[in-house]
Length: 125
Image (cartoon, rainbow, N blue to C red; front, side, top):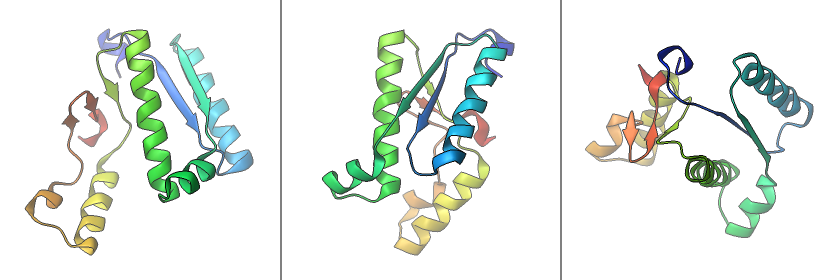
């Protein structure tokens, strides 16, 4: 999508080491896609369970922290303007439902914002 409109873009993939062979297949698939489109490919591996235990957070929150921090590092060092995330409409609905079950005010009903600071989510639409 970005390449088609002439935006300078790279592809970043996080392997959280949570799904063994399936995670490796995902990584290989994303690397091949980046190569086929002639895009820079960035990959990292995290010890997500260790990070979660050390920081006393859930595995999901650990993965989020690790991912966002690494994406920001790439953005800064490589000179990208934004971080585009692949969250889509199903993720937005899931977020609203989670917020409702936790008890939320009006602000929790909007789900995932399409843009927050340097994070953009072009697939929400």
